[in-house]
Length: 542
Picture 1 (tube, helix red, strand yellow):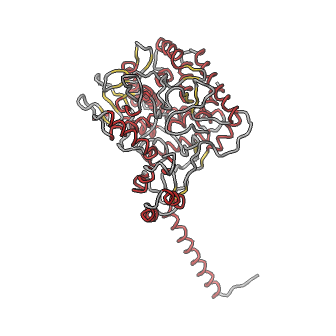
Picture 2: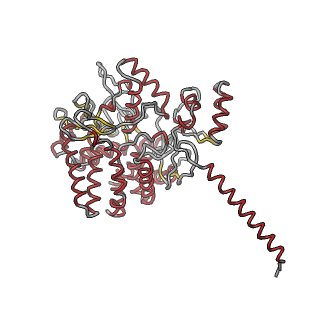
Picture 3: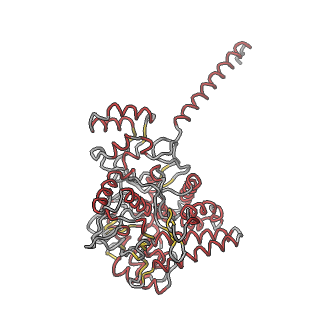
């Protein structure tokens, strides 16, 4: 046994105390460095942001720089940039790469493909697309407390409405814990910011996406029981309050505010909206160009109005589509004629009907019949307004409504099937809709978003996974099974055909010409892909 003198014990204690203090100091420094600034990139980087985003020679994708992570203090980066900003593009690009972690301009997933069958491939993809709980790092990423699934490609963060359709496949594959984690992330965002942003990026904090949170809870309730609704009731109500903000201030004279619109009969309906009137940071150059063209073509418009309409269309998830565009005298849909904020969308109002019904259900389970009755009445009022303002008897279809013009928009789209998905329509209306789907939307590879060839990605010839599921399930709700199964078969066969040729699941598909890739929009077709995986899994399990 080794014996120590009293003196040596005191020395040892002093040394340990000194080391302990040093360790505490070490732990405090990173804590300060990891402080998160929840600011959009234009506020984080100032002139550096504007210079980069306006320079088309640096990055082909406007989203690249705003997703970059600074590796030094922002003050240091901005100070060093001032010294080199006049030295040309080559010097600026080197500066960015020296001072930021720059994401790759991905069009495909960085993993080795193999010849697995498509179902096995998708199961593997869940792990490729999964991200762990975020470290608190600077940049535009909003840290989330739990793991989550990203869509893939350039979409490096969680997305709101994508996640519901992704969860459909996760449920089939037994990934209930992942579904739980993603819902808890969205609940965190609701409690932190008062709503669910478009995605967990600071540049998405002025808008949401189609409100699918209640439907996510439907999936989780199937696995864990109806107490799920009461557990997340506070978040359901906060979500609802976000969409209905300002309704108490509406009047006959002031009938529009934020996302709510008071109709002439007094009923309240909703629109997509964004509270900023500037170019989207992640699509800066594109928005500036569109706004300039719009003002040039229509002197009565301002660039601020155009930016807000572009942003509102981004909140819809349909960015972009002829749904939001006023056709010219020749029937052409030019993006410069976008007017999203004038339009009441049938899909949004159907989703909010479901949200009202879900809150009523949660209160009923909580044994609060008065609150349950109040929300049930709100849902019934909305259903009546959907019938009055969105059903077009001449077309035999639910259509978006231009409340400023006081008439339906001229665009037939799969958004008009949402009232079937939520069982708002009558059986007779469903039969009429089925005829329109058959004659105008059904193609060789599934349903096309709209029949219009505008050059926008949410128009022909493209088909999208979420809309196949909405159309399939909506028709099945009314026992129109032959058409529903035709959509299912054509879509899943197209997925399988593309997978066989490429070993990829892509963001969207050309459903008109099965020999061609999808196209249109502001970026190339992305590989991954969260909602395509989810819908394929769900459809093939039905």
